[in-house]
Amino acid sequence: MSMRIGYGFDSHAFKAGVPLIIGGLPIEHNEGLAGHSDGDVLLHAITDALLGAVSAGDIGTFFPPSDPRWKGAPSSVFLQTALEEVATAGYRIVNVDTVLVMATPKIVPIAGELRERDDELLAIQPGGVGIKAKTPEGLGLDHVAMAHCTVLLENLPAPDPLAHMVATADAGSDEELNAVVEGLVGGRHDLTALGRKVAPFDTDDLT
Ligand SMILES: [Zn+2]
Image (cartoon, rainbow, N blue to C red; front, side, top):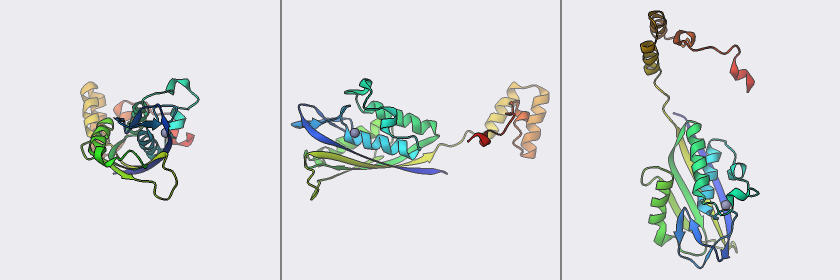
């Protein structure tokens, strides 16, 4: 079992005249968060934590603020890309934990709804996302929203090599079948026995 951990942080200033969206949830408030996208500070921290966990760069690598396509974009688009990167790397989420830091609005009354929304966005089981809220005591940052996030990933089970050999044997000639059986009995990982081409050089040397 291989596990990986990721950490993300983000901050946005409050701004009048824009809707407030946190964790993909529209929240009733007199101000929203300034940003090139929808300013969703929580989804940005989660996105960065996921990308960091599989060493795939950060949100700015995939969605540069200079690109007009992401102006006003819903941050669920960024999160979706990070989830695809995690799956491509062969991992899935175990759990996500977050801390929101802001003076207002109060998160406690909507924390349950927020957790449900984010379980859904991350396509994980109920209770997979932790959301804690703090006020920025002593920081002098009452007009700013901040979010911290950690994620834990585990690797997806590898495909069963025996099932693959059986499938190959079904499709092959007697000669190939013998080679596959020999490979099974001998416990060897002989790619030529499975009818696959072997690279003319060791690809590990290219890294
Ligand atoms: Zn952000």
